[in-house]
Image 1: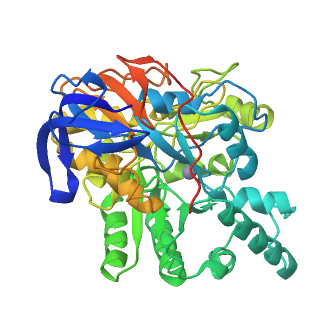
Image 2: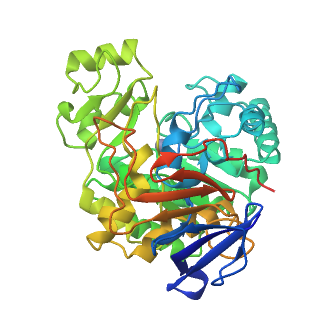
Image 3: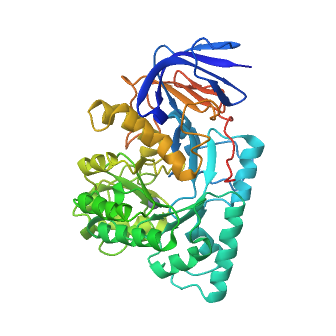
Length: 451
Ligand SMILES: [Zn+2]
């Protein structure tokens, strides 16, 4: 059946920023025609709104799918409501579920969005039985290589490292782990930095060095939480120095001045406040018994001991620096979304509408730049630029119809999953998933394996 969304503004990114008012026709999950009045069977009114490729969130933290028949989706549902149609989990070194099991659940039951995964190095290291404090032996490194190869062969798009989460992972170890993949451009490597705040720039330099040595396309994860501490300019300069040498680096960033992670992690070890220059009370916990409660010394101690997986939100970054980073052509929009029991930082439900709303309307980015960073650029990092991230014949019919005048995030630090406004339709694989901010179907998403 040929479906058509009539009367929409689409952006022709191949032709450099050309907007055109037309009709988009699609069939069997693929876009068929961009011609006006193309013959079709079913027509939807696009009301002269903007039709963007579905947003691609290349950095988020997927569900835990150890029970594959669990029907409840937490973050994927929030993703869909904000217009994300494809997301990649397995970031920051952390795989929540074995890849085959994760995909099996989606293949069997569907998912709100299309899901990709990366191999999470820290999780693999743990699974093999290497203590955080130990270096892998030669035999263990062989096991790591075998495991990474298996996961890549099963369809993972890359390998991610959570260096800050285990500071004993040295630069040498990362390069050793990547060695069998040196020079491969059909995958990518990504890292959550070693240090944030006043040591952010040296962390960028370390990641750029890994990218240069391995010659694997690289993604610097959530730059905003690494270098928006008064040192963004130097951080960007370090990245640009590498780009000028021909190193393949892209960067992802989320549009908030607060980061979020588990309170029990090494992020909150030792004299962590000295890196950020803020009081302890700028860090707020998210779940009972400390939901919405700012840290004190006693609460910090209790939470780390007794609720180590509880998410904390740290209001420590500078928003003007976050915005400045997003103006750079090599910076993609990505959420780093992470929830625990439907609670957490609003980025998992608001990132894309926030950039397309506030950031565009105030002039930080043009609408076409913002769409590019939410779609085409992340599709490139995944190597899927010929399949998703563009509205053109042959591309997957993943699309978002929104009103550029009203699109806006609504999720807050108090209500971290509140859906955005201004999104009229979301299409996943050519089927209607969201209409007028209401979920029509949350089982249209598929697993996407690297080919
Ligand atoms: Zn991270």
